[in-house]
Image (cartoon, rainbow, N blue to C red):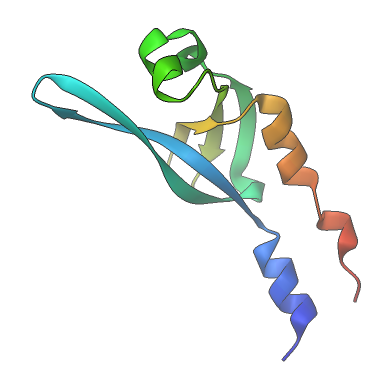
Length: 101
């Protein structure tokens, strides 16, 4: 078993907490889902406008959110995730330099 190949495959992905919601009885319930993104598909990371919405801030204890634009083979999509743009950017760069063949 080649651990180096396994580690390289894992490091291609970024684990984030995606902001999601469902409407029940005329009320929006927000929650976070784990999501793994291919780092090579990230186009941009910006501050999210959800940072200024009181209902989001009260649900997640004044947390910061970022919008990540990603490119797939068929479309461009933007998702909102937990964390500042700077913290997400640090995650995309972390550990890539630890690989040794």
